[in-house]
Image 1 (tube, rainbow, N blue to C red):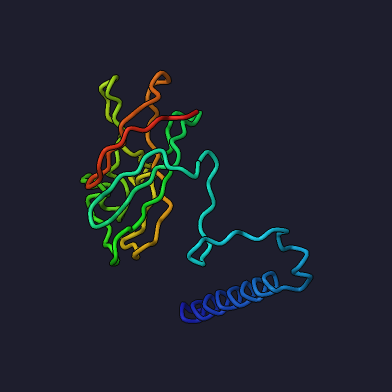
Image 2 (cartoon, helix red, strand yellow):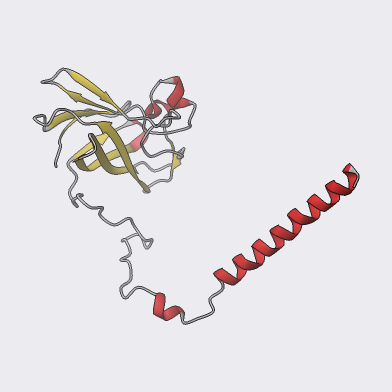
Length: 194
């Protein structure tokens, strides 16, 4: 068989495989049954703005542990700071636009490390400071240099908020209070639970 004939056979095989895969996908995704049996018994509550809002995550409270004002009407509310058994601390919160206009999230929040900046907009510039132990903890990175934090956002509409998280190496077990720092935001003292 010539190279031209082999190429045609290969393209036909790929096309046939794609068509068969799409057909199986369509069958698997079809309703084909009683959808009411799969619906949850309760409905998610709606926020006052009419849209569905994020629920309080495990370990988070309705009242924030800290609120910090940033530039252009941004407000960062920290709702939980949890020490995990894996040797890290997870900080959860909400980044809200309290201003009247759409805010372009400052690039400074990503920090100034080339490897982190290369991976897009993030909260990679956040740090935890242990004043007693005289140590600063930076947001953790994965093996490809991506920060272990909320990523992929560039603007926030007026009145909107974005659920955020950041993971840091854990300070020593005896350290329960640290300072949270984020570029363009005021510093806050937060307590670690767990």
